[in-house]
Amino acid sequence: MNYSLSKGGKFKSSDELATPVGDYRILPFKFDRFDDQRYIVTNEVGEYALIDNEYLEVFVRQEPLEPKVFAELERIHIAAREGDAAAYHLLPLKLRRKYRELDEFTSLHMMVVTLRCNQACPYCQVSRQSEDRAKYDMSLTDAMKALELIYQSPSKYIKIEFQGGESLLNFSLIKDIVLEVESNGPKDKIIDFVAATNLTFLNAEIISFFGDHNISFSTSIDGPRDLHDRNRPYKGKEAFDIVCQNIIKIQQTLGKDKVSALMTTTKRSLSRVKEIIDQYVSLGFNGVFLRSLSPYGHALKTKTYYEYSALEWLDFYYEGLDYILQLNKQGVYFEEFYTRILAQKIISNAPNGYVDLQSPTGAGTMAAIYDYNGEIYASDEGRMLAQMGDKSLQLGTVDMTYGEIFVSDNMENLVYPTMLESVPMCSECAFMPWCGSDPSYHLSTQKDFIGHKAFSGFCHKQMGAFRHLINVFENRPKDRKIIQSWI
Amino acid sequence: MTELKISRQFASPTAIQKAIYRLSPFGEFNVCEAKDSFEIEIIPLKELSAEELKAELNRHINDYNLREVVADQTAVVRGLLYAQAFSKVTKSVVE
Image (cartoon, rainbow over all chains, first blue to last red):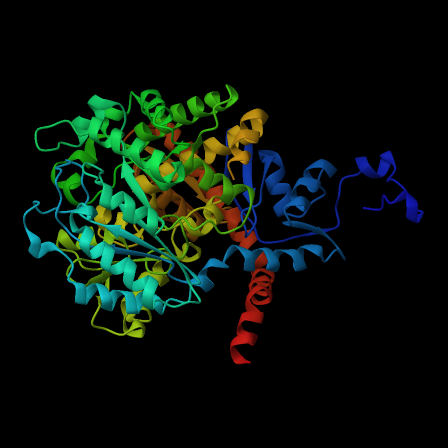
C-alpha cells in the first residue's frame, strides 16, 4: 500500500479503496464454521481471522473480494496480491519460531522418588502404595543413573520434578539427588527443582533445605475445606487446615513464588468454581489452573473420571474464567493458567512449554518420567497407564543408553502418529495450529494414540475453550486486554 | 427414511467420507453410489433430528469439498514454505 507522504507517495483514492480486489493468490489455510454467520480461518502458524460465510467460497474460487475482507486475509498471509512476496518470507520465519522448542528436546524430567503416599484420593491417577512399603522407593543407584541420562538432554534449561506417591516421604533421596546435581552436574546447564507434594507434613529441615537449594513446592488445593477434604482423605483427619498452614509457612519463609498449587475438578467441584477461586485468592496465589480429571489410575477404578462430561467441564471453565476476569476488573490480579496457555498460542506463535498440548506430542519430546523402579516413560500419564497394565508409553529403563531410550522405535512410534498434520479431522481443523496431541488420553479412552476425534472428550474440551476465547477476544475488548496482560 | 442425494459433480467420495467421519457420533450413514450421484441414508442417533443431521451433513460435505480445492491450490506453496522454514536446519547439520 502506497501511503508514505514524505516519499512523495499518495493515499489510495476512495475509488481504489472501494474496488474489489481481484488479482491475488491464496496461501495455505484451514477453516471451520465459527457460528451461523462466520467462518474462522487460520494460517499455518495460527494467526486467525473471522469472515462472513458468503466470502469463503468467493475467496477459494479467487473471485473479486471486498477490500476489507481481502485486507483481513492479507493480514494473516493467506491472501497475497500478485507480485507481493512478503508472506513467502514471513511465514517461514514464523514457522521456525513455532517449532523452536523441538530443538531443545526434553527439558522436564520427573523422578518418582517413591510410590508411597499418606492420602487416599479417589481420583488419584497413581496406583499409590501405603506409607510403610519402602520397597516402593526409588533406589539411590537408579536415581544416579537417571541423572546421567538427564544430563545428556540437549536442553540448556532442565527442570527436575520430584513426584510420587507423596515425594516428601522420601526426602532423603531428594536431598541426595539435589546435592549430587549441584556437586557433579553439568555446568553448562541451568537445572531447577520442584517437588510435587500434598504438604500434609512439613518440617523445619525440609523448608530449610528447600530454601538453601532453591527448590519449589507444587501442591494441590481442590477448593474450600469440605471440598478439599472430601476429595483428599487423610488418615481420618482433615488435611485442609494442615495444607493451608504449610502453604502459608512456605510463603512467609521462602517467598510466595516458592509454592504453587493445582486443583482437580470432580463432580462436586462443578457448581462451586467461584468458591474454589476465592480459596486460591485467600491463600495468596496469583492464579489457578481449572483442570479436568484425567482418565487414569484410581480415577478410572473408582469411576470418578466418568462423573461428568466435557460439556459440563466447559461450563465450569466458562463460569470460572468470567469470575476471574471480574476479579481482575476489581483490581485483583489473578490468572487462569489454562487460558493463558491457550491465549499465548492464539495471539503469538511463540512456544510456551505446555507439554500436554503439543504437536508432535510433548510426551518424550518435552518431558520424561523416571519411575521408582527405574522404568522410563514418555509421560506421567504413561506410567499411570503402565500400572493399569498398558506399557505402550514406556521408552526404556535407566540401564539403557540415552540413544536407546530417546532415539528408539518406541519414541518414533509415539511421535509420528501424534503430528496433527496427519491425523483425521485434526489435519484440516482451523484450531490445529493451536492444538496438540494427548496420546495417553486417547490410549486410555480409545485404546489408540490418535483416537477418533469426533468421539474425543479431549477434542471437545479444546474446541470449546478455543471458541470461547475467540468470542472473548472479538466481543469483549476489556477482557481481552486482561488476558493479554497475563501473557 | 431420510436421504441426501448429492451429485458427483458437487461432492468427492473423500469429502463425503470425511463429513460422515465427523458426524459419526450423531448418526449412522449408509452410502450408495449411483452412476452420477451418491445417495446417503441418514439414521439419527442422538441430539439431532434426521432433517437437522441431513443439513449438517450437506454443510460438512460442502466444506470438505472446499478444503480439497484449497489443498490442491496451495500444496506446492505449502511445501515450499516448510522447506524454506527448515532448510537452514538441514544446512547447519550438514555443515
